[in-house]
Each structure stands twice: as C-alpha cells, then as structure tokens.
Amino acid sequence: MGDSGRVPVGIVGASGYGGVQLMRLLLAHPQVEVVYLGGEGSAGKAFAELYPHFTQATDLVIEPVDAAVIAQRCQAVFLSLPNGIACQLAPTLLAQGCKVLDLSADYRFNDLDTYRAWYGGDRNDVAVAETAVYGLPELYRDRIRGANLIGCPGCYPTASLLALAPLLKQGLVVPESVIIDAKSGTSGGGRQAKTHLLLAEADSSVAAYGVARHRHTPEIEQICRDLTGSEMTVQFTPHLMPMVRGILATVYATLRDPGLVREDLLTIYRAVYRTSPWVKVLPGGIYPQTKWACGSNLCYIGIETDERTDRVIIMSAIDNLIKGQAGQAVQCLNLMMDWDETLGLPQLGFYP
Image (cartoon, rainbow, N blue to C red; front, side):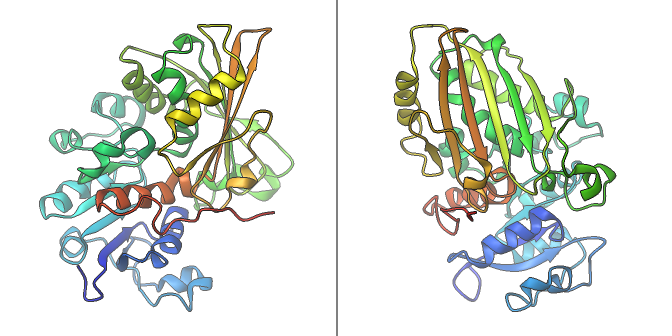
C-alpha cells in the first residue's frame, strides 16, 4: 500500500486514448493512487500539458519507461502500448512482484505461434505468456482473481464474445454459421495521425476494412474454441463509422433448434449473465445503441430470432474505450485485488 493507504498503480503509454481513459477512471477510484506515468515521445511533459482538462486533477509528469522504477513504485501497472512492446516489459515487472494488465495483444493468446502469425515479431517469453489470463471477466472471472498477468481483450472481441458466449456455452447454434458484422468509432484507431481517420475522410462515410484478415479474428476464434471445446472459425468484418466512440456488433448464427424463440433466448442470456453487473440484457424488441453505452463500462445486449431463416441475431453495444479497453482493465484489477467488480467504474453513460 502507498502512503495514502491506497494501492499504488502506474500507466505506461499514458499519452494515448487508452492512457487518458485510465487516468480518468483511476483518479476517481477509491482504492488506488496513480503514482507513475510512463511514455517515450511524451517523457518529460506534464500529463496536463497533453490533456489540459486534467490541469486541476493531477500534476504528474510523464517519465521515461523504466521497468525497475515501475516495479519499485507500483503494485500494479497498466501497459497501454503498441503491440510487441508489453512483452519486453512484463517479464521483468512480474519477476519483481508487480501485477500487470496489458491492453495490447501481446498476452491475449495462449499459443504464441498464433500471435506471431498475425502480429509478427520474435518472442522469448513463452513461460510468462503461459501464465496470462484473458481479461474478459464475464467468462474468466475466477481465473482473473488469482492472476498476476492479464491480457485485456480487444474492443471488437469484447462486444462479439459477450454476444456469442451464451449461444456457444449452451450449444444452441451451428458453430460454422457464425457471422459477426461490427462497427466502430474512429477512436478505435488510436491518437496517432492517420489519413483514413481525418474528419474529411471519415465523416459522412461508412467503410469496411480488414475484410477476411482482421487481427481480432484469431482472438475471437480462440475464445470460441475454449467455450465449445472444439475447433471453430468465424466470419468477422469490421467497419469504421463516422463517430468518435462506440462499437455495435451484430452476430448472426443458425439455431440448432429452430423452435427456439426470442423469449427462450432472453431467459438463457439473463441466466448466463445474472452475476455480471456490466452486462444488461434488454427486453424483447429493444435493440442496443452505442450512445447508451458511451462513457460507461456497460455492454447492452439485444436479441431477436428469425423464423424464416432459423437464425438468431444478437446485437451488442459497448464504449470501445471503456468496456472495450480501459474500463475492462480496471474491472480486472478490481477482481485481482478482491474488490467489488463495479468499484470506480461508471455505471451510466453520457446521454445524449
């Protein structure tokens, strides 16, 4: 514990969108104290210089990334970094007793061959990677409680898997029929300047990207295989929407039992998520909107069936930067520290 009696935590990669969301959440968290901010290009700058609306909230300065310093000061650290960097820091941090929550893809895969195939790069941390727990609390809550290393899920997999999990757990659909059509706001592309994310490019336009080869596909498939106990492939297509934040995933699948109706599935979903405070299963005929989740750690799920096609349609809406990134990481920290899962997290979104 720190001098304040609260748990000292750090953020590496504090200058990006993930970092600023973490700061907003952690500064308001009753059990933690942010004692370290790390970065490369932003080192030496006050956090409030990068984000002036934090001027009255913190006087912390971003420091060069130093694993020894982090482990000395922090009981837990969030790594909000590009893929391929967390795996260079995590082994040292863990060896010195620091809990690590990685927001990149580095520790999401239990098979590093899959990681290399989709993300590239050399890895020599196989033993460390084997200790990582996939940070989706609604599926792996008990494992997260005992973990020291969390591979926090991507935003698309979070929305998609929360929609899919009850269907796969109960064996309700034909696995090879699963299609995921997902849409994201531009903040999912990060804060670095990119032409396709410019207002003039993205506004008043909707575009698919990463078709048939998006990096989140193997992440989704890995967890689907874990839920079903067998090999499984999905068709996943993401789209960029002219909005800042939010993800809507629409999942289609063929029902094994065409006699199942919407009310049957609502009963099943409510039972599966009865102990999950961050998943809200909506009443029949109400379908989620990204605006409802904006600024919150909630996932809203809507359900429909189509008797003409024998398909189920599940719609899932989250804030990609909160439940899809920083909020979910804080949710995992709450579990790791044996705190209430809802502690320090926003329970209603900003509306309108």
